Length: 512
Image (cartoon, rainbow, N blue to C red; front, side, top):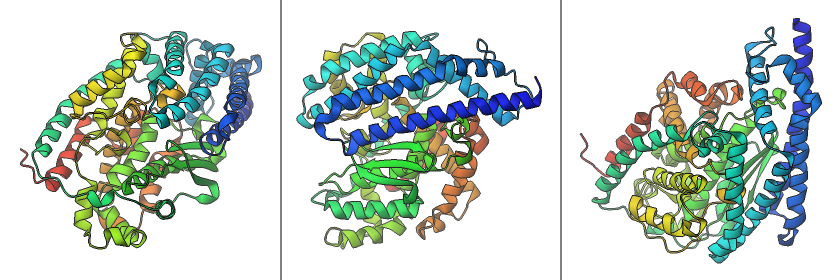
C-alpha cells in the first residue's frame, strides 16, 4: 500500500477514535458527577445514562466502518501491521487500536450495558453500605458483580487463569503467575522488616489526630496542587467518599479528595496521591488526543506516578523542609511546639493499621497482597461472597497482626469492587516498584535534588516525568517504558533497598 493511502487510512481511524474518546469523556463526566454532586436519589437514571453511552462507545469501536478501516492497516487475526510506510510511533498506535478492538469484539453489547448499569448502582450501594457498616447491603450487588467478572474473563479468554483476563485490563500482558511471583519476592522481606521495627520504640504521632477544620485542610490541599504544578485552569479538586482522579481529556482532569476530620495527614496524602495521577493525565500530548499515543499506558505506571509523589517524595524529609512551615501556619496550635525531625519520624511511623490508604510504606503492599489473594479466590470460585469478611479479617491478623473492628474499616473500605475493578489492586504494588526505580533514576540525574525540593522546587521532577513517561502515551509497554526511563529492567530489589535504607536510619536498625 502506498504511503499516501496508509496515511489517509490512519487519519480516518484517528478521527473515528477521537469521536470515541470524546464520548468516553462525557461518560467519565457523568461518573465524576455521581461521585461528587449528583442528588442521592438520581442513581437509577444516571446508571442508564452511563450504560447508554458505554453501549454507543462499544458499537463505534466494533462497527463495520471502524472494522473496515482497521483491517486495511492491521491483520485482525495476528495483529501484524500492514501499513508498513507509517512511522514507528503510528505503528504502535495501530497495535493498541487493534488490541482494544479485539477485546471489544469479545464483549457483547448486552453484557456492556448490564455491567455498566450494575456497577453504577453498585458504587451507590457501596457508599451506603460503608456509611452504615452493613456488608449485607452491598452483598447482592457484589455477588452479581463477581459473577459478571467471571463471565467477562471467559468472554475475554485467557490461557492459564481467569484472573489473567481481568489483570490484563489494568496492566496489559501481566499474568496471575507473574503477580504471584512478584508478591512472593516481596512478602518475606516486608514481614521481616516489620518485625524488626516492631521491637523499636515508636515516635509520638498523637498530635496528628484530633480535630482539624475542613477549610484549613482544603486550603493546604490547594497549596499542594499549586506547588506540584497541577494546572487548575485544566482541572479542579472536589470532595467524594473515595479520592479519585478522572481524566475527561488532557485539558480537563477532575480530582477528588476526602476530608478526615480527625486525621491531619489523611487528606494531605490523598491529595498528593491524586495530584500525581492528575499530572500524568495533564501531561499527555494534547495534539494526539483520540489516539492511544494520548492515553496512559497502564494502571501500574499510573500508580507509579501517585506513589512517587505520595511516598517517595511526600514521606521524605526534603519535601517537608519546605511544606512543614506552611502546615504550621494552618494549624499553629497543634504544631507550634513540634520540630521538623519529630514530624518527619511521626509521618513515617510504622505500625500496621486497618486502612490501606493510610498504611505506612512497609505495610502497604501487604494490604495489596491480601486483596489480590481474595480477588483471585473469588474469581476462581474458591471463596464465597458470604465468607469475605471472615477471610479479610483472618488475613489482616495473619499478615499485619491487625484486628479489624468492623466491615467499614475492613472489606468495605475500598470502592474498587463496586466498580467491577477486579484486577486493579495488584497494580498498586507494581506502581510502588516502578516509582522506586523511577525516583532512584531522578536522584542520580539530579544530585542536588534534596536542596531543590527543600526550597519548594518541584518542576524538575514534573519535567523529567513529562520527558520520560507522559509524552509517550501508549507507544511502549509498561516494562519497555520503565526500562527506557531507568535503563534497567523492573526489579523488586530496588524497592526493598529503598525501604531498608530509609527505615534503618529512622528506627536505628542494625541491618547487615
